Length: 291
Image (cartoon, rainbow, N blue to C red; front, side, top):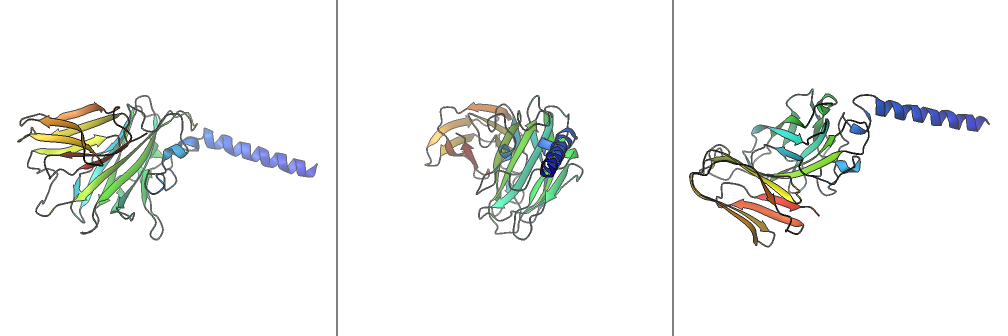
């Protein structure tokens, strides 16, 4: 009887803790105090927020998660960019991001612009650093989208390519892990080529930013080309890993901005693709079509 009483007391305490977790704002299933480290869709495990948040397929359209980081970096320079997660009808938000070199080491230094909304989890020793939302940065009850600012100090000269990996959640604020959308991306940033002092605003074709998202995509890929009108013709090519062109777009000189152009790529098999342009000053995108 005494053992049964201890068991019942332990069971009651566990149930009470569960109720407190899922009923207290800023706790429970939403992980609004920040996700555990290692769920930014980064290799080799590629773990993301679907480990805890379920209900829909990964990168379910028409939601998106993008960053407006440059596609080139100057070694040692500091950049501030926005990460924006958008999904109509969602009302609680979260993300986790890391920056890695091709060898898997940390690529640069991540920090928060506003520590009220963003925090950094610094990995001990050579382990990875992750930046994520704080409790207030989950923006509970904020509808349709959320944006966080991130500061990044680029690595030293010779470090090579840096890839930003991120995973994020757009939830319904019901303190339950189901019914939530998960989005991921991987964005590549190359070191500045020799002789280019400021490649983002001074590209010779007049354009400032080329973006493509979501990444991975399936089946729709959205392209943005923003800046001033083209000063010369521009060709956009999407190729597979064998170098075969699977999509080509020709933009004449004088063309205006291409804003949120959706491309239905349902005819393509899953796998890796490269989006490149006829201008070497614009870094190619490595894209993945999900299964």
